Amino acid sequence: MVAFCDIIEERAVKAAQTFGTPDAKYYTDYKELLKDDSIDIVHVCTPNRSHSFITIDALESGKHVMCEKPMAKTYAEAKAMYEAAVRTGKKLSIGYQNRQTPHCLYVKGCCDNGELGDIYYAKAISIRRRAVPTWGVFLNEEEQGGGPLIDIATHSLDMVLWMMNNYEPKMVVGNTFKKLGNQTNTANAWGDWDPEKFTVEDSAFGYIVMKNGAVITVESSWALNIADTNDANFVLCGDKAGADTLNDQVRINYVKNGRQVIERPDLGVGGVAFYEGKKSSPKDIEAQKWLDAIENDTDPCVKPEQALTVTRILEAIYTSAKTGKPVFFDDND
Image (cartoon, rainbow, N blue to C red; front, side, top):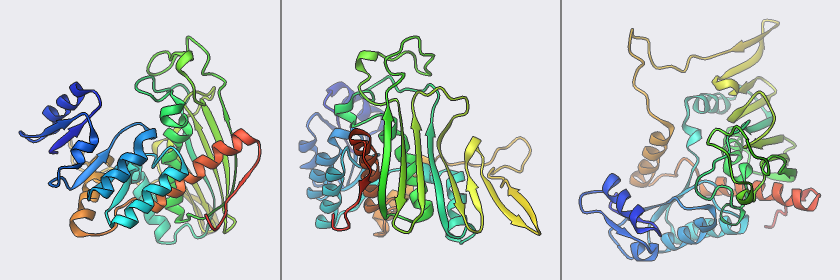
């Protein structure tokens, strides 16, 4: 990487020294960075509040953009990003690296092959018992737009929509809770949070009806009194078979020869004594696919219109929670 920007100069310098070329530049104003015509790609890794305007400015300066998830804090901001990508002809992708896990890729293959049939019920699950991120601005509603729903449920919902290849929601109803955020002595994975800074929900749940009648439930929490946790997982139910990634494994369930069958595919890459095999992390696979899309002028793995639908649904759950009413989508919007 040839250039870095951070509003705190010391962090920009450290990043340049750690990850940059020997002559990497650093900035504290991203607009100065965008003036460099030699830069081809910009990665936006800021809090959610600034995803939209930095991305739009980067696209309009002639750069391709990969933006951290979620696409934006609001649907209007995400839509403006999508429209900027269309207008400029530059590529835009959102960082949903969980699509590249072995579990997700295997089940996606089953879906694309028609092995599950018509998928009419799904669960997008991002449930943590006590794993509230206490660093940065994760607890700040103004900067992030929300808590676990917009932070981690965004991953599981993206995976479910991708598996189903269904991006046409009809109606959403949901609710959010802040039941544990004001507590202390929390047994949190990253240490106790500061209740005064905890301005977002600690759990959120949604119910989505798609235009074709399919139903998706969304479950998310950073802190919830639940014994069984599943982070960035999903359940899919089709008329031929079902699949899930619960408990860090893939299960395909169906009926064969009059019997209920559950398959548990071996997703390991070993097979040789004392050698686990060569592995690539999801983030590395995502990065390579992103570069391949630019070099070969093909669609990125995560298309901006797909991420736009994720943000639209997440916002609808928050809106439903605030109003106490379901949110119906306008076909003309």
